[in-house]
Amino acid sequence: MTELGQHLKRAREERNITLEELQLITKIQRRYLQNVEEGNFDALPGIFYARAFVKQYAEAVGLDSEQVFEEFKNELPSAKKEAIPEQLSRVKRARAEVNTKDSKFLQLFPKILVTVIVIGIAFTVWKVSQTDPPADQVEEKPETETGAEVEENTKNPLQTGNTDSEEEETVTEEEETTEVEEEVVEPVQQFELVESSGRSFTYKLSNTNQFIVEVSTTGETWLDLRNGKNKKFFSGMLNTKADDQAPDRTTYDYTNETEAFVKLGKAMDSVLMINGQKVELPAEPKDVQEITIIFEKSAE
Image (cartoon, rainbow, N blue to C red; front, side, top):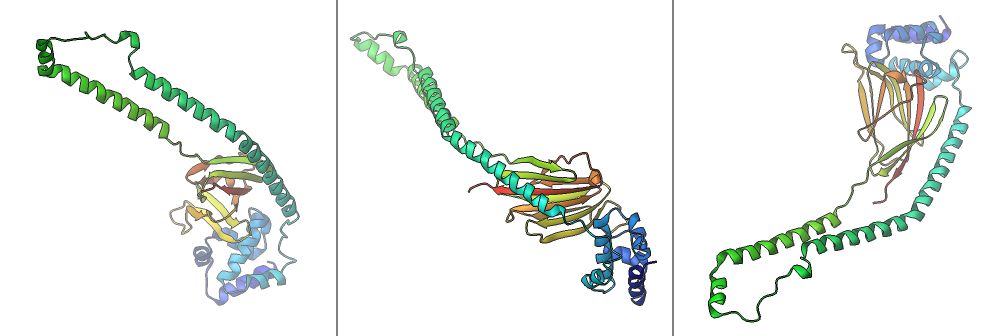
């Protein structure tokens, strides 16, 4: 047993907390807690889990986790921080590519709009022309009618009814044409992968004013949720076991953020939803995936 493990175990025993009780407090399985006490970090899923488990263990038994990290930093596996600048560089390049694509779309948008308007006007003219009978089919009326014919037409209710019906049909068709012209297509959100490298993936979310992130598990998943400024929203286990107090899903609203960072342990058991739309996670790697989502809110 390492000095770190002895220090943690001694603090736990001083508080009369068993490993089973500590499991309920930290939502970390008993075998992982025992590996932490024994200093057997190789048995944990990875460096990220090792440091996270030590932090939760220390806080649960009343220790200052930052002081523990500083005092026993030689025993703890160090996190690889050199990949962070490279990841930020990739995000900046992805933003530059996105801005270039948007600029090209804005240049083409006026032409597309004019084309749609011309087609709409042509369709309206064609629709209206279908409601008027050709000039050569209009029956010529006699210049004069006898008094008997005039009286017969006046007293014929069927003839009057047909004329009113034709006028109502014409008005209805014109109203339908107007409704077709005023119909507006609601925008559909776009979610696309812009870059991937190893276990790191960058996506762009656009054409929407909402950014809701939901993560659930079909088995057991370690989850870390942060924003673009590295502010932590959630860090812990998701579990579907009925006898475990860990939740099987969590949801956070990132609408007021520009970036979301999602780190998944056991990614093969994870389900990621963005605004109710399921994200097809890469098949590999199956263990740990780091996902950055750039949010470009639509103009209101």
